[in-house]
Amino acid sequence: MQLTLQQQKLRDVVVVRCAGRIVVGEEIRALQMLVEPLSRQCGKVVLQLANVSFIDSAGVGALVRLLGLLRSHGCEFSLCQLAPFVERVLQVTHLLDVIPNHASEEEAIRGSQETSQSASHASAPAKTKIVCTDGSREVLAFLSTLLERVGYEVLTARHPSDALTLVKVTSAKILICGPGIQMNQLEIEKSRSGVSAVRLLHLPSDFSTADAGDAGAKLLDQVRSLMAEGISGNRPNWMVQDRVGETQDSEK
Image (cartoon, rainbow, N blue to C red; front, side, top):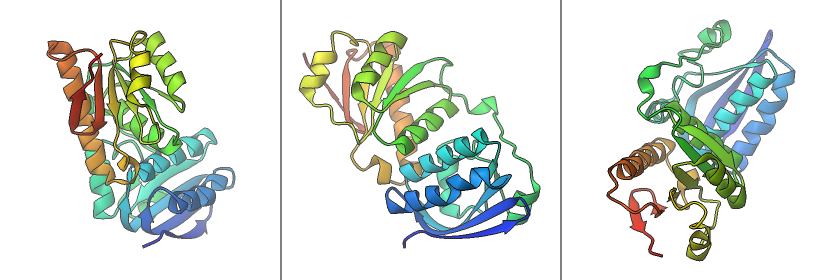
């Protein structure tokens, strides 16, 4: 089911009722084209998601980007009436407290923007650096918010060369390459001399279109596993991750 959008303005608030799938492609572009101009036209935007049947990783990233964009223009942004699937995705990815959400449209219209930043979710050492690279801004937004929510410091780059530079200057522990980045084994080996202490996590090709909850949970598990291996010293410093959940050590 394609995404359909219906908007209604109530005083200084615009409610956008979404139905269908919020996924990479035309659906995300349609949502962005409708919501982004509203940041300069009203004081608050509310997305009603009661009839959203599916949201992928890029879709969650799009919501995070809209949150940042609207806030930068002084416009509040919140969700309401989360469909069970959407609520589960935001819970699993630790994003339920990042994007303000309400039980009903009425509460969302009345309520102020409040975001809980409870430290109880922080399960990773503060200041542990991770670099993420992908051509999609939505994927980078999803990765950044997901990882920062559990305590990592995240730096992003849309080009692999920039990502490698960030790794070198920040001594990042993990380099996550999104599905839009093609780094063959030869390119990896060429970069080894400069970033030999980093672990490489290469996300699968369907990461951006997968169930965001499952993809996010698997990614966090894999990152924690790589960090634990680094601390214990049981694995070599350079690792290649072709698919979340399947690792293969690279040999020089």
